[in-house]
Image 1 (tube, one colour):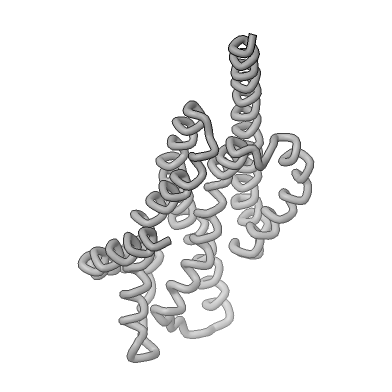
Image 2 (spheres, rainbow, N blue to C red):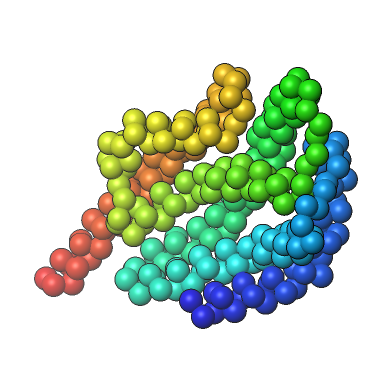
Amino acid sequence: MFWILAVFAASMITSMFFAGDVLHFLKSRPPASLVAWNAFSPLDGIKIYMYLSAAMSLIVAVPFTLFQIWGFVKQGLRKDERRAALKYIPAAFVLIVVGFAFAYFVVFPMAFRFTTDTTKNLGLVETYGIAQYFSFLTNIVAPVSLAFELPVVAMFLTRLRILTPAKLAKIRKVSYMVLVFIACMISPPEFFSHISVSLPFIALYEISVLMSRMVYRKQQRLDVKYKDRMNYGAV
């Protein structure tokens, strides 16, 4: 925990030197470029600056955290399982980047367009605070990005023998309901938007089941080989 916090703090301090440029970049692209950002508190600018620096530091902190977790659990793994588990770290990083891209470029514009259209139809004046804008952005991007980690988490837990494909299949209906509920909460209240977000979530779950099954079968074959070698050595 000490090293994780130290790396997070160091990466956050480094991110502060680039947070301003990133903020200007985000402001120059739609949908942010279509509206004016306002500060409703003297601390809004500092809050967003620190918030963005912390978010950028996660790019370094998350892979390092996964590496530390792997270092903790590898003591209970065999040599071949250690090599396989180590591969999950770059995979988790890639998936969270893909999830962020999907959330920011697909889901967030849909939600923002729906809310702004509703505001205009009601005859209201669009005045957006920068803190409220980023809060709205986070509420959409964070859960979608984390949902894209499902395949890696399923594979990792299967490798640790905590999860099995049978367990995932058993809770499939409940998982579908939870994922659809999350998709409906973060997407505009219209059928097309719900489907556009729900289908990728469901696909991710099915990919998780498939990947868990692949790891489980390979694990079973390795267990058989390991037992055969042990029996042969005993003889």
